[in-house]
Amino acid sequence: MGTRKKQLSFKTVLFKVLVYGALLAGILLILYPLYITLITSFKSPAESTENFFAFPKTFYLDNFRAVFGKSNYVRYFSNSLFITIAAVALIMLLAPMCAYAISRNMKQKYFKFIYWYILAGLFVPFQAVMVPLVNYTANLKLNNQFGLILLHVTLAAPQAIFLLVNYIRSVPSDLESAALIDGCTTFGAYWRIVLPLISPMLVTVLVLNAMWIWNDFQLSLLILSKSPNSWTLPLFQYNFKSQYTFDYNMAFASYLVAIVPIVLVYIFAQRYIVDGLTQGAVKS
Image (cartoon, rainbow, N blue to C red; front, side, top):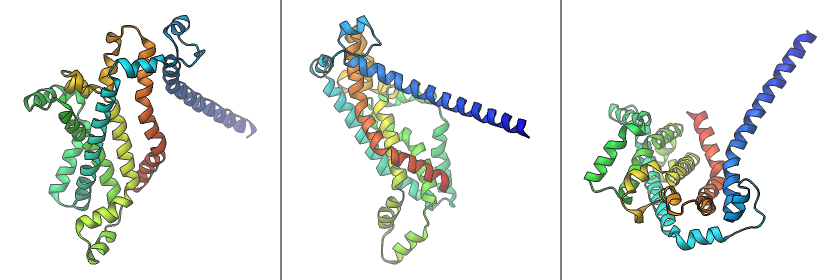
């Protein structure tokens, strides 16, 4: 009995060592690129040449002055901000309404077909639709920022509707029935009762899509590559090296400025993301 306790104890310790080791490796894997970005953006080219991985001796800010002063950085930042805000606004307007209609009419064959048809988009790899997308957008004269916003909304719809339909189905329909008896319209019940109750999942959908659209590179490269004036930040950074040869300090300064807004959004909203996903998992 005592030997078995010792064996169980050894297994428990070994399990904890493996778990904490994996967590530590994951933390280092995430923090190391951030460390390199932070220290390189605050070092002069001479310091980086001397020791690329060392901590900066002083806070060298000329990299940031060069980013904002020479490279038209504000234009690309504004383009990314406009595309992200417009696409997320359309997603947050259309996806909840579509999910509400589907969830409250799931017993009807038409809405059930629409639901599974939209969900099929989750299983289509982007590489399979990449070439047709480029051809269609070019033929429709949508290879611009407006076309990119429409594509972001379309590609985000399957995941957003999947999350929202399951969440809305957990909201008792009796609440809406009571509101309708009191004289509320269907849209009024949706706006005043359903939306506040699903707010954790709405925030989850908002943050997930904002992070994806802000950091999107592949779709932007396909749609916006012809016109440098309409580039987003990832496209600008992709061409940064060829434009400024080997000025890594300036490049990393631009990376740091680009990740700050989305990191702040995630920090302030991460509690709602966790709440939305966990409550949605329990309810569904």
